[in-house]
Image (cartoon, rainbow, N blue to C red; front, side, top):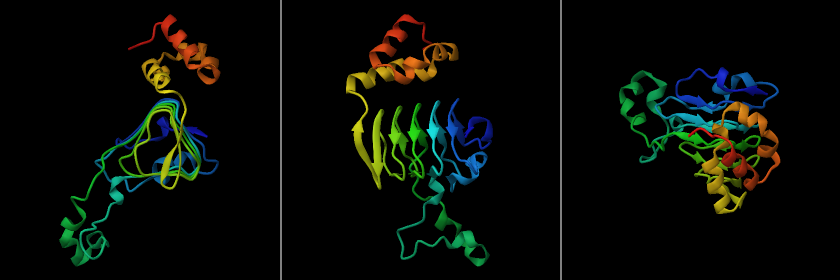
Length: 199
């Protein structure tokens, strides 16, 4: 298990503090083994305090192929005389940046497709293929991934998003780690109301 932020050098990948990747064999190779077809300009943004299990894969927009003709084969990337037709591999559809919110848990061997937005506090079940956006504080799973359940009531989700504990100073998080991990939304809201929380 490694914290990802210090290991990533690609300027198109932004990893939040305390986000980790757990892979017993290749954790230090996340940028090259787990972020595929990342030729830009789309970005991969992963928030703070996320837990990524072994085999999580982000497929980026560079994986797209032309689909409006008979063949999807990317002839120009093979070079030679085919390279003269570079327009056939440019201007392909782009879904935008792939963004993972804060405090997200992604299970083993999950595949996340280009341009997906995963909300804060979401949980992605093992072996899922995420093809569409995931709302805040939901549990999703399957292929394609679908909402299994909401983790909290709508009012509680709004409260959690307003509290945004992941943006608190480290000292405040440390002082209240038990409540963050095992307390109720009301307990966390009480702390946020009693303690100065940065805006």
